[in-house]
Image (cartoon, rainbow, N blue to C red; front, side, top):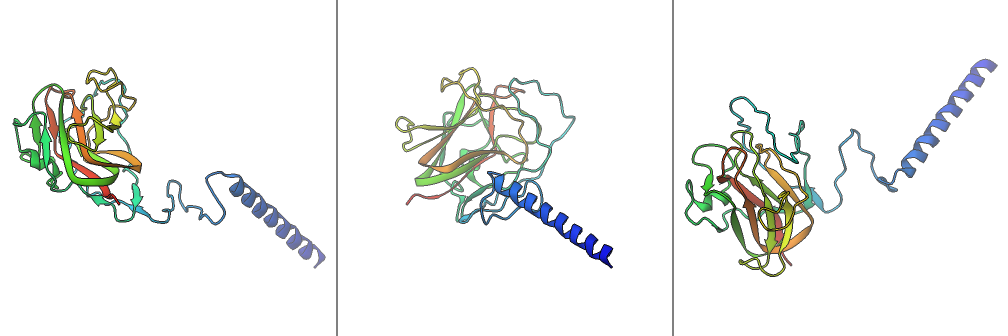
Length: 248
């Protein structure tokens, strides 16, 4: 009987020590604060108050043919897992849907400029716009100042390809002269003349390229540059989405 009581006391003491150690480790972790909930699985982060995942409806994955080994400098590897949800203030939506688009190439080779904000993201014939060779840009007029939290661009994802000199900027005026802010730039040699970029080249997929603008950029106009791709000198856009809210 005494042995049983002794064993029970030892077990209780061991459990107490383990619990104290776990509590100490959690408190020492700078990622956790008093009252935080520990995620049940790695990679799952509780949403902060007032934040929610933005609803990005992805098109079908349509890579066709054999995936070639793309040799491009400063190239990010293709992700092996789906992109995690992007959190933004509650009420954030695609404010570019149906908004006017103008471009450096006013007469696209294929398609119409309004297709860039028509909501169709599928990699199908008749769903993309083809602009001329060399450096080109498209500009979206949000028609009012907005607080922008993220931008997602689909150039052309029917096959894996890489577009060069991708630069994304926001401004208050259509001419992009005062208060221009660069949100993304992978022009590694300043061939576009907009400054040397520190972002990486990436392979086009059906997820599109999400550009993180948190904690928010206030602007009316969004401009996107590109300078051909690894297959040819032409520039393509399927869709551009701008996630934000009207400026207060």
